[in-house]
Image: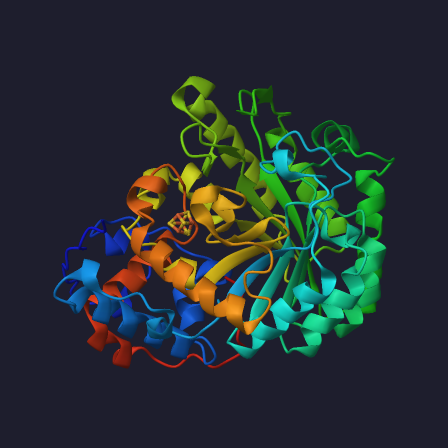
Length: 438
Ligand code: SF4
């Protein structure tokens, strides 16, 4: 039985832009614009979905008996997510020691390609704006990788590709169809080939330096395209699946130099995530027993050395999670509202199914349907009903209490709008240079 959510009104939810503000505490965690999801949801193209979602939630909560509210899919706003993570394949040619998806790799589970295309077309018709082609495997290994990217661009979608770097030539081949707001990010996590090999265990002889040497080919194929170097920071004592993780925090500055010399547009740092023992959520794998203070200090020193290498053409980013770790604010991002609203705006489509959040990829409690959950109108309608139930019943406060949630800020902001819906009218329109990646 669902619990009725208490309505406590915030004074000015429309101006809320950080988890700490929403919780009435000081110390903002300043968000990079790429992580200012509240701002992105007020853009033309996403704003109507936001308005309809807030209206729907207000109606649900104002019903006399919330349990009696009929969650008929026709009452659920008829919008696809604004943004999805798309796992094209579960195949991977690495065996990364820090991989949170190791148990789902190379399982042979795959899409029916035509149904994948019809899912993408249907979602685009119903409001999907962006697709991050990402994990669960290496996307460039999908046999119809290029065709799928070009198909999604023909639908008018913004596209991002997150790759391990072994398919750089395939990315260069499709780069011409991508736009300046699209991006590519390579997960490399090291400054030396020795550490790269130890962390990623490639099945063939791929070297860090060869991968970096191919980046100028992508940039030459499309000079407008942003190409990033992604670095998951690891430390001694970190482990997952009962395996110790290779430490790389001492190579942060070295990797920054390599990225800049290799014509990357930026390097970004985020902390290592492990799986929580209780509910398998992805959580930052650090604790007092792993010499947290010394680790944080060493990372900070390296990041300080990295930041001074930034130029007008090369940026150095710290993820929200890393900022929280370095600034001692992890706990703020672990305090979620009861309802996770972002399940409506951003989902994960994988050959293993449709999921409510990247944190719960392949976890049964986050499952919205199978791989064909939105491949035709009938399936799409059924999935709307499942999503409505999950939005009502998935308790983010407890399920995600150990997750340093990237969407913590925007979830609290939407919660504030639901509690004070008049504030929707005071939000300014945000039409310039839209970025729909969530
Ligand atoms: S609260 Fe955060 S971690 Fe939990 S399901 Fe929502 S977006 Fe994912």
